[in-house]
Length: 243
Image 1 (cartoon, rainbow, N blue to C red):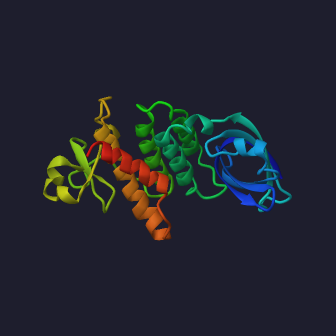
Image 2: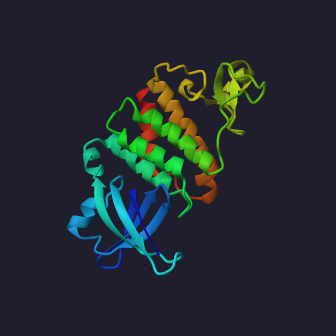
Image 3: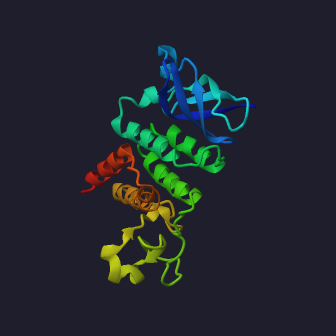
């Protein structure tokens, strides 16, 4: 059994004296694990950093086996972000959240969007909004998508400014007014009526709060696992910027 494909390193763990267990994200083979023999050598460590783009060949005697990777570098993106703590936190968050995807299950659109966000991390005016949209896509792929197209109470498509924390549906200004203290904010750039308006720091802070809430409620809390620390740090940083 063998396949070769480009993908991105999500994580790595020590395995034995010299090998590494690599978690790799590809378009056609999804999130895939495999051993990299000699992966703890100095040369290989620089390649096997989260966020780096590699071409990997996976081999195993049977499909259900763990298998082994041989890899070649394509784009070593991690080193470029090392001196930028916020961008590095974003990269770490993307890799950690991608670990929620069921192993060996292809999610082509989510993978392609993941690559777009990582390639945009050097542009601070672009990546935060892209990452929020990617997190919405992740929720959708995992079966917890939000309905932000119409008001849950009235069916209206106009003036959508809230999201119900219970239903994950948008709510209009008028319908949500009596309950606004309990509602989550729906940033304008996530609605069909955004019309390309400028995305503010407040929009970004509320966007991360929105996706973070539903990731926590629907995925991390039921699994009794800890929300990724880099993702919490990222959200706190943007909220502090508008406090």
